[in-house]
Length: 107
Image (cartoon, one colour):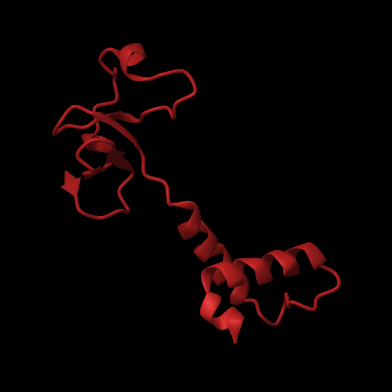
């Protein structure tokens, strides 16, 4: 069933619709080598609506970074910016917070 949620496992590269596993035609992609170049991301199947290639729906790097920072921030008492045992992690957390929340970093 076509869904409107970005939580679905597959997204069409042409029409942008999201699909669940049971809907994507992934038995055999027609004319695979004519449609996929070496080095390209491996498609997950074909869109049931338009026939274009679908790919696994992965969160963007920014979405992943937000989730990671949110998780680290929830442990604010455990990992701190001044933590000498985790200097690389502390520095990465400061940098990520500055990228995601520039207004807070400026103040």
